[in-house]
Image (cartoon, rainbow, N blue to C red; front, side):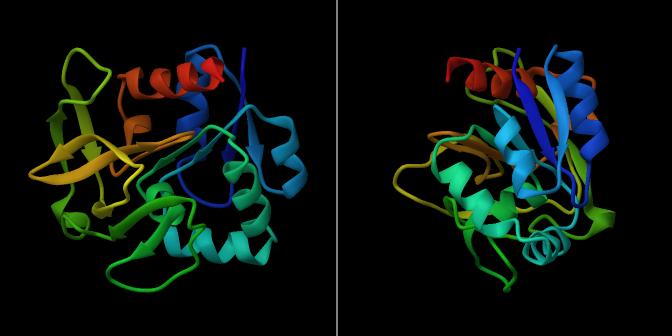
Length: 190
């Protein structure tokens, strides 16, 4: 079974690990460049994207993350993870990995008080997925090689490009593990 690292600088680290372990994957926290050498896949969790970017810069993780993701490491980013992987923001400036050819808008659906749940139709899943959106971004621009897996009210909220999949919502906060299962399948398919 795959070993999945969860970037453990800030955010929903524990929640992702619990879901992945329930699916049979081994998990580990990723905090240093050396940790990246021991994993088959990587999750960049939801949290505060600005903080994740600043801590990744402080701990020398930006270039190692860019390298392993660029070299094909299967990577799944949720909410802040989507933002952090984007090539640009349409509403501000912060450290970004630039490995996913999308432009995102932070807090696109509103502030914490505007958090919501919605039933989504996601490519690869037969039944609707009840998604949790918390201060969620959306994808404002999609690059040529990026596939939109799901949209909400006309805005892309889940995308895939080669070895990267990213969602604006938090699948780790639900009892439905199908989105994580798609990612584990992606790792195992190599």
